[in-house]
Image (cartoon, rainbow, N blue to C red; front, top):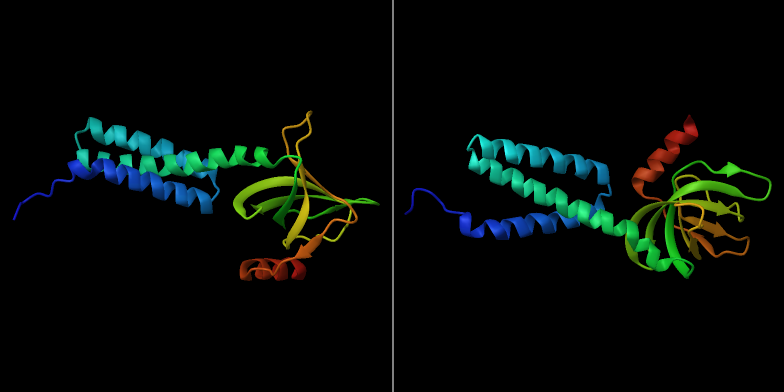
Length: 184
């Protein structure tokens, strides 16, 4: 029985697995800046431990580095993912994330798109709602177009008065948040 296990031949496999789990984590947790900071810290610590000849710790932080790299790779690609769907009639699932500002004929607010045509995403978007049916922290399925004005870098959704809007069930966390907001 060998005294030391030799993982050097498998290190490339571990890097691939770490990158793969980073992609999965980036898909479900959309915090680009958190993963970016984790990437910078992992890079610094991997370099530091390499310089002081602590190769095992250096290798561990290289795995963390590729994990955060995979998460950021997925998140940066998902930012351009929405451009494929511009100006097309789509089925969206969105969650209202800010209080609607009331105007005489419309409401405006920020929403988080949960899915576009069954593709999961986690993007924030401005909504101009002429139906005035959408409420804070509720999730809805809507059929509409995503628009990107030429003078702005933000995406917009216009919901006309005759837009198909159906409310989805609230998650347990959203119910608790909504109850707390209502009691304040």
